[in-house]
Image (tube, rainbow, N blue to C red; front, side, top):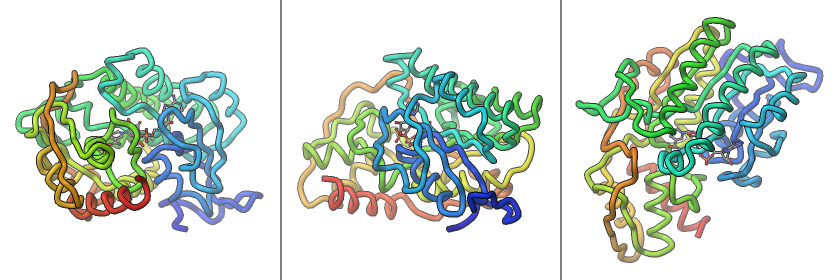
Length: 325
Ligand SMILES: NC(=O)c1ccc[n+]([C@@H]2O[C@H](COP(=O)([O-])OP(=O)(O)OC[C@H]3O[C@@H](n4cnc5c(N)ncnc54)[C@H](O)[C@@H]3O)[C@@H](O)[C@H]2O)c1
């Protein structure tokens, strides 16, 4: 089991573990992948309310606290624990849901960050890593974004993530916590929730194609995104553990744009039956098209995407056909 960068054998505790991590949302897609990379040599604790995650997703060996990351009492109960890092991944990740219930979105994605940052401050935890999003950029022309692009969030979801980043910056400046915000672009791959039709472009279309042989696209087929394979996204979190000081923000992206039409074509080409495609009105706050520049994370953390979208998507389709449906 690989140790997190910077992990030190001398830190081995009485329980025989090297590091202790709080990874929120380990019953979900990204949280499970990150927690899995850390178990073994390290002690890993997760908080998850199972709102979109499943208990059987949580990797073996992870201590599971069922509850909400927005619950101040639950977070307070962790005040006597010592974490080497907090990796905050739990959250609701749908712009659409943030319009349906802005208060729920605020509590889950933003209040939770403040509660966990404050837990880190009070317990002397020196590292905080956060699952932020490319949604903070909004629409740009040209549509390729580096980290210094102006933030024009278009959904309450994106506002909450941008606010969380700013809280991290100030907690870092004021209290010396090394804070890293990872602006995840579209993460996809094996293990993605195929029952949630409100989050994850590739997984939504694939789930529809498998269950109904019909894909309903909300918005234009020309919209485009930057897709990052799950294993590589998890790797970015592990690499971020190597940061020892200050606040920084990194794109986690591939620098390549894939359109809705291209995604659908790959799905159609890899399924043994015809798939009908229908178009309906777009969802509020949806960005038209965006992709990212990954120079910064590549230089600072040595992270570089290797898996092309078609390769990753074929893996995902094979998994979904065999193991899911
Ligand atoms: N998947 C992507 O493409 C993507 C892109 C950008 C950012 N993100 C961010 O990454 C994070 C994880 O996304 P994911 O794709 O793994 O989603 P997911 O739904 O698979 O996982 C989220 C997990 O958090 C849990 N959760 C939700 N609200 C909670 C709460 N209030 N308290 C405790 N647990 C809660 C869910 O039960 C689930 O297990 C989210 O914060 C999301 O905003 C994801």
